[in-house]
Structures are given as C-alpha cells and as structure tokens.
Image 1 (tube, helix red, strand yellow):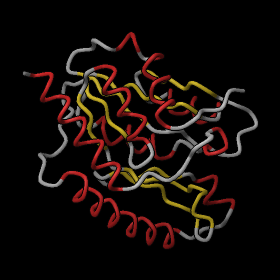
Image 2 (image 1 turned 90 degrees about the horizontal axis):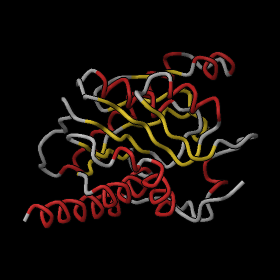
Image 3 (image 1 turned 60 degrees about the vertical axis):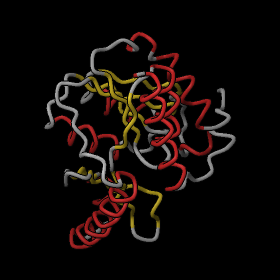
Length: 220
C-alpha cells in the first residue's frame, strides 16, 4: 500500500478527495493540533476556506502514552476506551488524574494558538474536521461530540490514514467520513509516513497566521 511522503502530501490528497465539498456554504476547516494542522492547512488553501484549530488531547495509558485509553476536548467532552481501560485494569482515579493533566495542556495550547482571537464559533457552518491519522479514533470522536453540541450545519471528518475499525466508528457519528488509506494490519499512523516528525507549537501558530493572511488577501 502507498506510503505518504509527509503531512503536506496528505493534505493535498485529502483536498482532492474532498473536492465536492469545496463550495459548501460557510465552510470552515478545523485541524486537530498539532499534527492535523499542517494537513488541514493544505485543504484550507485549496478550498480558500478559513482554518482554525480544535483542541483535543489523547488520554495515554500510564508508561505507554502512545496507547490511547480515551480523549478529552476543550469543552470537557471526554471519550473513554473502556476495552483498553478494562483490559489493563486501569483505575478510574488514574484516568481522572490524566484527564486533569491533559485539561491543563489544552488550556495552555488554547492560549498559545488563539492569542486573543475570538472563541471558535461553528454554529450553522459546514466543518471539515481534519487529523493526520487515526489510531483508536478516540480524539476524533471527542472532537465530533464536542462540536456537535455547538450546532454546526454539517461535520465532515477527514483523515489520510486509519485502521478500518476506527474509520467505521467515526463514520457512524460524522455526517460524512473520508479515510484515504485503511490498511490491515495497522500498527500505527507514523509507519505510513516517510516523514512523521513532530509538529511544533510554533509551526501551528505560523500556519494559522498564514491562513489568516490568505483570507485577508482574498477578501480585498
């Protein structure tokens, strides 16, 4: 199965797959930081759509943080993977402690990324919700459920890579779901990228600034 060169290529390929939505009314592209933002940026540029971030944090298993036992969104919406929690016999007190820690990190990132910009408003808008890939799907589900209560017109979830099971689970809750690659067996998102280096806070801030400049230039 084809590998992706980097997040930029992933975004360009997703933009092609999403082309039918280019002229959706009040379209907004939301990237899940950090890695989803470079992917979302390419879609925003291709569609001439506004780009913003939606803060979600994975709840990692203690000492095995890459394994998700759930996720939490900036609104406080929490999604738990009870299969992982039960199999590893993780006490709920530990889950709550990690939730509290990740909530603090969400608040830090919100301050860094928004820097005085007005709070996100998706009411009545068509939202393209983008990440650089799914593993368990917990972060995307937390984002979907949190966004849904804000009454957007439609939510289209889009990722370049996902195991079939996670893609199916997210598809059940989104209005539409695009997964470009759904390999089996699936050992992790990073194995399907040639370059899966970590995206920094500075990169996220710069991409948001670049998008805002593009929007302003197009409005002239």
